[in-house]
Image (tube, rainbow, N blue to C red; front, side):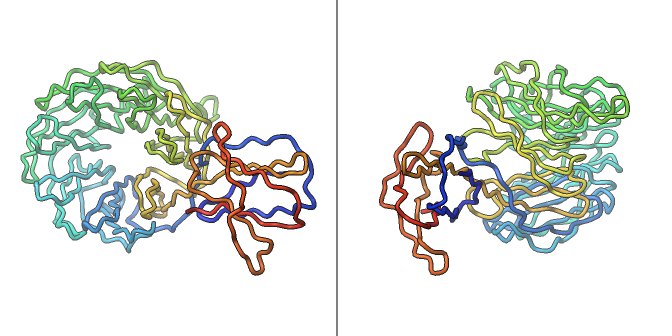
Length: 454
């Protein structure tokens, strides 16, 4: 017997009934197994560093905006709704664009771009026209070597503001928005060593946006994340630091244990010890709901994690993690158990030098897909979760089982693939713990089965 890992829509597995032999029960999954299928690679500018997904032309299909560090511009790729994209259109930004974020900065209900320029110590604002095109950039000063930018309303006036992590000046710049696409002079807050990434959430449940910065400590080995609690007036408390793994590069915010409290997932790049690259990990820090966090619990991913994001990739209702691993050229998916813990990583090859990613439903099937930034362009990966189907023979019968989250599939059979005549098997699936089971008599010489999505 065997366990077949098969792709949904029509899941086909041949069974030659005359050759079946007894075997022990084989393990089957408790849900859909994560899986990704390449939809294509799409060219952008030189050395892309960051990507954001949004609907720039208001057609209901996610588009991409990519910050290109060496070419000093932003590539906009309009989505076709099937996981593929139109050819990129480039817009000038500042010097060394390193990060990108989205917001409506001029209150016209059209998405705009905010681009952190590491080479120019400023942030570029490109106002959207609503048709997928953008106005020329306006620049606003930040700290030294801005490396990350986030958008939120920090002072409660209904106007989007910016927060920027500045790697060289070891601080966070907060620029309050005027509501017309311009911003006030930055206010700065001390961070840790080499803050490379910034995220925004509500950590103390006061409905006021807070910040968390990844302090990568490229030369100091003082690895941490800094939490800044927002006062609701555009100012923040002094940072509180929490230890992470080695060289944290990215942080994502979600509720991993179902307590409605914000938790953190941190991608730790790792480093060299005795000429061996080691200590790559993902740190999970569960929140207390008062702005503080439990000590980090580390999970293995690939080598050199640079970016982490959160989505429900296996459609089980729990938050999963996806990590871009630079050195191993993979993305890792850690499926969440719903109690704050995660399963072992499932790794997928994505080609050389992956840097960052965006998560959105690019192909319109209601499942989160990936857009992975690589030196060679954007790799679009469609989420096509697999179902692990178990087949077991015992006492003259064949039992086929599949996990409960796949109730939308019907087991069908045909005696031949030459001229297939697919029909639903007459046996009714029985719910057994966390699986559906169908038991069939071994009274045929050859038969083909498939799980067919209704």
